[in-house]
Amino acid sequence: MSFKKNLSYKAFSKSKFKSIKHSTYFEVYDELFSKYRNKKITFVEIGILGGGSLFMWRNFFGSKARIIGIDINPDAKKWTKYGFEVFIGDQSDINFWKTFKKKVGMVDIILDDGGHRYVDQITSIECILSNIKHNGLIVVEDTHTSYMDGFGDKKYSLINYIKHKIDKINHKSHKLKSVNFKENIWSIKVYESIIAIFIKKKQKQTISKPITNKGIDDNAKDFRVEKNKQNKSFKKIFEKVKNYFR
Ligand SMILES: C[S@@+](CC[C@H](N)C(=O)[O-])C[C@H]1O[C@@H](n2cnc3c(N)ncnc32)[C@H](O)[C@@H]1O
Image (tube, rainbow, N blue to C red):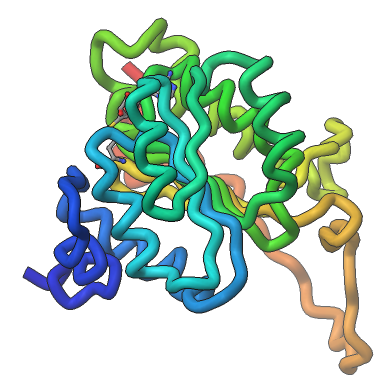
């Protein structure tokens, strides 16, 4: 099992208290978080439960990191005696985030392993987006709940919300220009059960425009094959694709 080689898995195994993660997450954590190890970062995890993941993140990021936990269960406050900052509140409450942001300031990484309802996931992203540092990220776990019953109205699932964000990212293209995209989202990466949202400050994002180099122009013709739309192979693929949307 390859995940056992991951540094985050080693940090998880070494944790003094119980933590529940999925086997596929460790490769993702290593990929996304390794560059932040041993740095003076602010890392926030929503969802503390038995405290084990706070210790896992301490093991993984090192002593310079500020590790903050959020939970709706007031008992979670006990983890402060181990050097963690703990905020008690409901991640689907806008007022909770207002207070949190005032007290904590800017954050490098926020990992959502909280209630997993769409209202939890979406409210947290909407509220914290402006509080993530340039080159920081928001990571949401257990995104498979978007396909499950019991987490809210699926029309407003996290995955549908992310599709909307993808549309907005693409509309930054100078070819479209129809949306004034004011958010700090640079890109979004999808893994099994995890979504990572990469943040770049709007002012630091490259503006889309056509660029030509100084190479010799041999006036090559830019071909488009319109007739193929009617051919057999296209129809076959199109029928298959249509089924995805049924
Ligand atoms: C899956 S557990 C967290 C597991 C932990 N991160 C670990 O790795 O072991 C989910 C936690 O989220 C908390 N939670 C549930 N709904 C919440 C909400 N709306 N706001 C904040 N925390 C919430 C629960 O009390 C629970 O402790």
